[in-house]
Image (tube, rainbow, N blue to C red):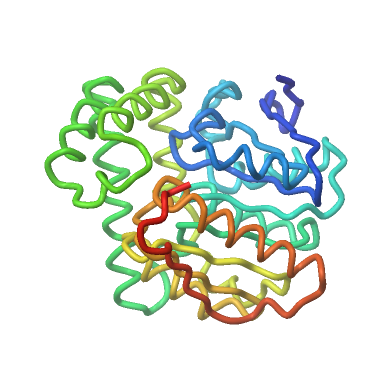
Length: 301
């Protein structure tokens, strides 16, 4: 697959050239392009889909200067990739950290995207006055600080081992993913120990922890925005807070899903993405709230 020179680094990407409008999606923390679940293959057919590895992740790799690994730089890289590929106002979205990058991109580069898709993510960082959202953001900051400290002292393999143990002993939703617990452990190991360096992990964790609080800038977003989040996601209060701040948005709650809805309810996540982009392309008013629930006994595909 190709790379393109953007902001002093070579960004690895793939492009599907599928039917439909251009859609650029950004992966989550420590989850480069190969970590997307199988539902991404459907979106490759539905859209001219661009996936890429974020700076310090996967085949894009770690830049020489760790100071360039910041949320603002991630957003600038995304804008540079869109420009380098000659995409004309694509739809732009991401899951988890990818949603944080998308929100930063939307605020910093107005007019570049046709719409934004903020999935299982949060735009704040201990700003604003929503107590539930603030509590979540403190937990997130602490988690990234602790995991970076573990990697710095013990390495990525030890972090993966501890995360696997925590998942099996304490995560009450993990067994509801489309992956078995063994598969989750192997995928986590492959993404972190196999596709990131120690320096890249630490720098990317710092970028997430020190990101700008965007809550004061969200009301200035005028383009259509999809906010989707699993009902069991720790981030849900933040998604709800962000939805209240964005004027032209659709807020979709996905039932029976925790963090990263594509790993819990891929069919519903695909539906949310497809329906939103279809409505934006048709000029339909996207504003409103919706709840997507799996049919009883339906497979998670």
